[in-house]
Length: 176
Image (tube, rainbow, N blue to C red; front, side, top):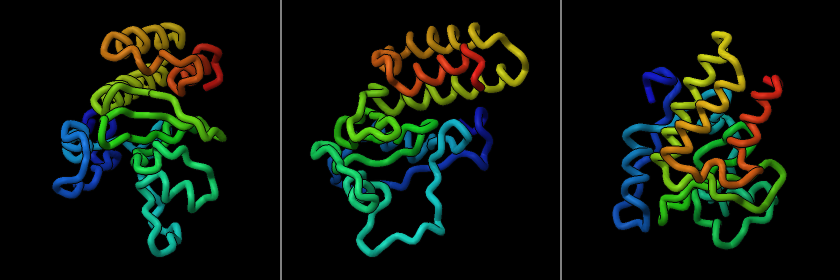
């Protein structure tokens, strides 16, 4: 992660309480490998944001309530990992699955089978960004990303409306 994003752009997820119902593999990866903070994936909270007492910016139910957004009951205990472009990315801490809430939606889609898949995709995406900046053909980049990431975990491309599919479509159409 550090090699792809640089030391200053990796955010380590806080340790979790012992005995909490969490997927230990997911928590180990988040606290030891971390998440990137970049233009594509934002994982840092704004420390100047004035949170009210009792507000937990990590737990979706608390966050959605704070902003007056309906939160699906089964996702109230999920944790915010960050934003992939305009989609809120959340972790079900018990199962280890990663979900996306597309912008303006209250429903979610399964985005990655686990945190390892998310991290793999984010590292591959960083390689795509670097190659794009160096003039590599956008269609070739999109095809490569789909092939490499899809061979590791096909979940990111299973839903036509997933943020990965939408972003690659924009890349192929020259919107970046």
